[in-house]
Amino acid sequence: MFKRKAEDTLKNWKENLAPNYAAILEGARRVGKSTIAEEFAKSNYRSYIKIDFANITTEVEDVFKDIASLDRFFLRLQTVSGVTLYKRESVIIFDEIQLYPKVRQAIKYLVADGRYDYIETGSLISIKKNVKDIVIPSEEHKIPVYPMDYEEFMWATGNDTYNSLRDLYTLNKEVGNGTNRKLMKDFRTYMAVGGMPQAVKAYVDGKNFSQIDSVKREIINLYIDDFKKIDSSGLIGKMYKSIPSQLATHKKRYVISQATQKRKVAKDLERLSDLLDSKTVIPCYNTLNPSITLSLTKDEDTFKLYLSDVGLFTTMLFDSEPKTGENIYSKLLGDKLPADLGYLYENMVAQIMRATGRELYYHTWNKEGSTHSYEIDFLIQSGKKIVPIEVKSSSRKTHESIDAFSQKYAKFISHAFLLSQKDVAQEDNLLFKPVWMLPFILEKV
Image 1 (tube, rainbow, N blue to C red):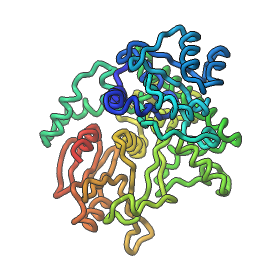
Image 2 (cartoon, rainbow, N blue to C red; image 1 turned 90 degrees about the vertical axis):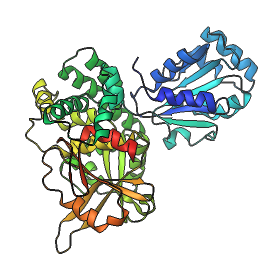
Image 3 (cartoon, rainbow, N blue to C red; image 1 turned 90 degrees about the horizontal axis):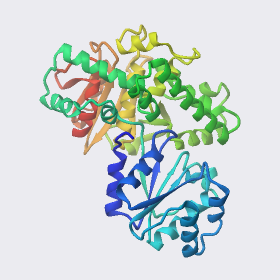
Image 4 (cartoon, rainbow, N blue to C red; image 1 turned 180 degrees about the horizontal axis):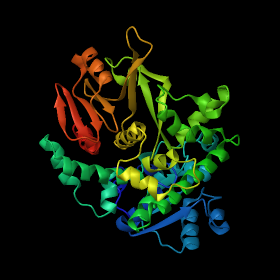
């Protein structure tokens, strides 16, 4: 079992919100929700019962047909599970609860009863089809679960230098080319593996990158199958799989019709909503006027999409082959791929930012006297100030957009950052940082 930050969030829920609220772990399939819930239950309760609604026996299913009498319900549940529950010392885990919406509706009454704590987990959990016939309980404390972040990845791989990396950032000095190259290679390893626990486990177990890639392809195929269950046309899957190619062509926004190869119809907006609800993607919205609070000028119709896990993104970059060979990964780790992979680093930045709970924004505007546009990859609200971030995979010599933005919105800017693979530097008010420093930048802003 890998150490996960969501367990700390669950501990805070247990100490401060239970028994008045059930905890609900929300996230994409295979990000580790079920494991987190069960490991937390083992460590923090005298006993627990886990009900997996994706693999429920007829005997257990029959218990849930009648929850009207809670005394009887709890006795039957203990009998069929063989586990004794203790008042205020036990927790019941409802795994994949979206498959039994009536049980989710009953959370209101189970919480009000107060005997035990409850943790729910589920994928595609807010999809309208799963909850249209029930009253969503207000007694749920939502806890987002993301793919493993870089710190969690370092914990899993036995690398205990994360605090040293933070100290290097705090110094605000060059770390040295040799040291930075080594740290960037470590970071590219994370980009290649990603944060899906199954892929991380394969890496920790010594599997080669072809084998790790196969694990990631299985997860991608699982997502595509899930999307077909929601919409049999297969178009949600096409929308999902088009994300890397749309980013690679430097489009200013995500274009649904390019993904579906059909003219956009009203149904596509529902498909997009389902895709967003699946938590497999990260939306980044165009903000029309950054001089005002970013969210107030968010354009809901102009957005980019990133994958929730950079490891899956890396696999999808090379999706034309039935499997991605060791040679490709070797070149990626050595930064020797011939293509400009700025969009891969953009996805990495989006994932890191989203894992902090932030909503993502970018900004684009026309160049005066030109058919081209300026674009700022990401914007962060920092109090009343904004922080523009530009992302490059290699050379950082040219940075026209962030220079123009910094001039146009000078009085609203706190700091301006250009992230790349290069060492720390500064030009006027523009701060150059290696991309591995982003988590520490976000801690400060």
